[in-house]
Image (cartoon, rainbow, N blue to C red; front, side, top):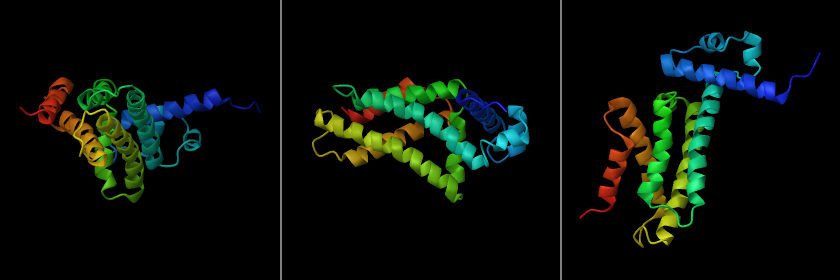
Length: 197
């Protein structure tokens, strides 16, 4: 029997993730069964379970993929010298979130996962790990901004990093649950808060 190539395995895995994403966005995390995802992916049960054993594994993989896009942007910004001012930093990250909302709606899954994390220990662990990665990078950005004189000398980078993460999550929640907000307006509001007259 010929051996399956790594490229084929990766493509099949992505096929499943794309199918799961469509199902979760369309029907919600709870209303989507593994059978729904298998049908959407147009695979046999055996082929599907070779890659993923549970919805939680799918969520971990989808979240990791999307958060990788966000952390990639943050890492690029952290390599800038000098580091961009915090509002510019925030706008770049939110631009990636906005692109996801406007394209495949994957960010909507994040809100579902946050709710699930309040009572599912396995999902909570996934969420904790994902957002810890973003917060750690936001703290590093705050340290760089403080060193560049963009923040007050007594600013606590841990607190600023946590606030940056909160602003990103706040944009997601307002965009999805309320609407009527755009990235530029939101970031202009942050600028006004940071530079009161």
